[in-house]
Image 1 (cartoon, one colour):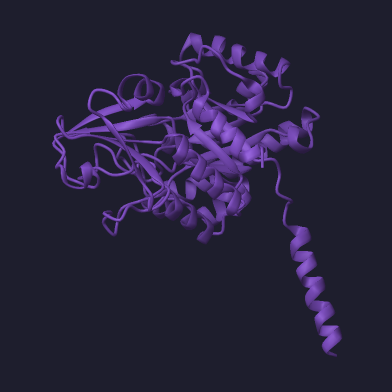
Image 2: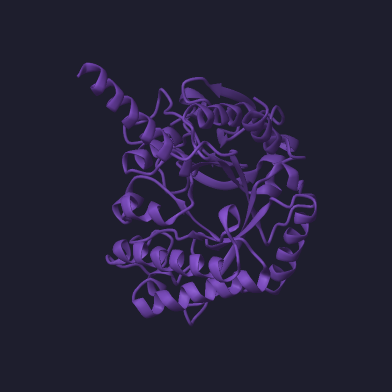
Length: 373
């Protein structure tokens, strides 16, 4: 009997293992902004490009609202001649983009949205749709929102999945070539307004926006993309690890979670000098700067000193004379995050956005860390 029970336990374990998808190649996903196209893109370093952004027009359809977007997409699609496995995905939305709540409201409006998305994919020979709704059920970005966004978001994704799958069948696409569906997700209150346990079942993966944790809306400075909490962080402060754990707790498979990193820093001025400006009150938020600009002008220059927070696994700049604090991801921070992705068997890494890098300095850290081990 003990041998039989042992055999049954082994068989159950084997079946559970067999039903779990094998760890695929780690995804390396670049957001590319149509208004800031990089001068050079090395497609062999990427698995996917999310082109930002398409919008929702007055009729509830997915549309490219700028003529240059079509030209930009052609440029990106041409990269497939160098890397035929590269997938180009159309990202819809972005901060302040309205129309989602209306598009998700009824079965008819969801159908209009989904069919227009499929049509746009076919017209431009794209590989999938990424929804960047910031955020369902919340008006922090000044967009229309409703309480019913929570179930309606699920229904919108369900409709999209069905339409994309039908289009894949009709277009003879199978396996990894089928049309993809992803979202940009967040943490904390985001989960209060989405049915994450249902949402993820319709998605190929989720791009977790594990950045912007500290910004103009927070009362103190902090690591805007910290992997872990600083020793000086308040109990309610956010970090990437906590965000990933919230997704996992909600039932999202780890291989569907793509960790987001920032190719830009956030600048705070008039900062209280304690802790070299870390987790301190500030007077003015001064916007963001791309990593290339930080590297060329500020890191180790003009009184800015680079510090490393071992506990948070995050870098920051502090200028005591100017009382200016800058939170950013640097190569050491990104290397730590790549190791986190490997150790936790996540689906890969994505970043916002490619033109802010400096000669692929940050991208190369991602590629080397995820592929060369």
